[in-house]
Amino acid sequence: MATLRNDPRYIDPDVCTGCGQCSQACPINGINEYDCGLNLRAAASIRYAQAIPLAYTIDRDLCIGCGLCEKVCLAEAIRYDDEPKKSEIEIGAVILAVGNEVYDPRNLDTYGYSQSPNVITSMEFERILSASGPYMGHLMRPYDREEPKKIAWLQCVGSRDTHEYSNAYCSAVCCMYAIKEAVIALEHAHGDIEAAIFYMDMRTHGKDFENYYDRARDEHGVRFIRSRVHTVDPLKNGDLRIMYSDESGEPKSEIFQLVVLSVGFQVGKDTIELGKRLGIELNQYNFARTDSFKPVATNRSGIYVCGAIQGPKDIPQSVVESSAAAAACGVLLSESRWTQTEVKDIPPQTNVVGVPPRIGVFVCQCGINIAGVVNVPEVRDYAKTLPYVSYVEDNMYTCSQDTQVKMAEVIKEQGINRVVVAACTPKTHEPLFQETLLDAGLNKYLFEMTNIRNQDSWVHPNEPEAATEKAKDLVRMAVSKAALLEPLPETELQLNPATLVVGGGVAGMVAAKNLADQGYEVYLVERSEELGGHARFLNKTWKGEDIRSFVNALTDDVEAHPQIHVYRSAELIGVEGFVGNFKSALKT
Image (tube, rainbow, N blue to C red; front, side, top):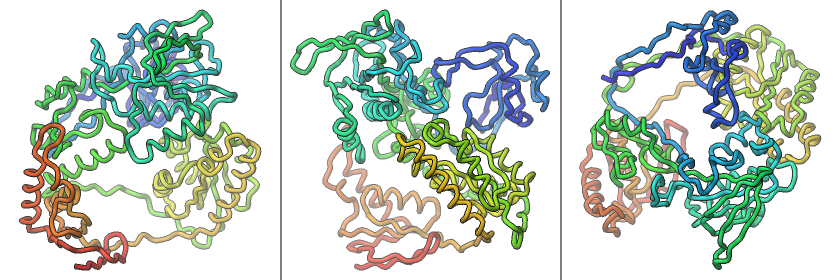
């Protein structure tokens, strides 16, 4: 049983429509934490445009109790008397995915972070580059809102440093995000700018990461200077003088308009306290203590970790660990699977067979990702002239929750029976829009999406007129296809609850055992005569853990498991079928 405390929001999220009237009427402003303090927000606000639920909250530490928000709220969602609530939920496992915080460079007077507004952290620079950030994606420095001509990144700020207030470990992601920020800054700039990265070592481990580093240096012209900067002096005009020594030991001095501190990761105080409450062991750096063979399991059975609470890591590795933690929970909860499943109530679908097409076109601005190149209003007005188009609008972020709700309402009100969205990649967003069609009572296959970001604005960033014409062509083709769309029924297929795992190394055996422990039948295929892969030739991990003992014990568990069928000296020579029903051929 877990006890949760819900802090008061002072605006009922079940009633709030996300219209923003309360925020517009609020007379009090405070620091916008989401934008790292680079702009202000009202006491009645929403953290960011795509928050879930899309409901406003009142910051009572800022609120003066004037009552204006209550007067303008037509939904009557304001709850000044809201109080903390506690609730208990029955659970079978816990996953801690609380992340961490970035290093605060205020403790280091060397870099002038507290002395100049033009010395910023990498997280602040991320918000500057963001289309929803304080400067709407325009590259500007905080001092005078001018575009910098020279930007310097200083690596390992708060990481790989044994001095007081710093951390001795490498934060793993700083090298790659600094290179990414430098490349994006060059792309966002309206004029010629110079980007320089001061580093100790470029740790670009990962698939194709070294190639990205090479392209940044050779194709984009990013300067990489091996030096640990010891002084950043603010100048009267807002510029910054960097004093450093090159690899030969010769002292150098350069003037930059903006300095970005590549701050590392560290565990926050709240996370440390949470770990203590749950009885989780932490290591010397306050990350969750795990071993190499069970990287998501803590010392307490049934409590797992994933992501940066386990140690500094990037997004792909966090995703891998989250899948591993979910799989570990799946073993514990396998007996309870499907016992509390709820079926979503979907309205009946409107019959559009034989009905003339009424196409709704929604064009996304995507901040400046699209609107910074493509003339979105011109594309929107062009779409109005296309055959069968009965409704057209453009949105800042078509994928946001408030726009999704609005789209469903518009579809019902306007009698739309086909939908076209001109936005970014359907690979990530098509299922979201199809779900919106279902909520509006339309078959989800009456939807067409065209990619005017990846295939247009990103391809032609310096050709706005040509990009606009191409966007029109893409929308025209999507509308023509949408007019021919017919509803398709969903087909339910029988599932064969068995899995083929190819490769009997450590990864293959762990995957096979986890699936088998969840109750699935598993076929494990290994090309050699023995299980274990290359791990059989290793002795110990860097922590001193015995690899051979682990591999031998794992092999014994796999071979003895009643749900696992092991095929040695076998190769997969063919696969046919589809998801849920594959037929595989093995050669032994």
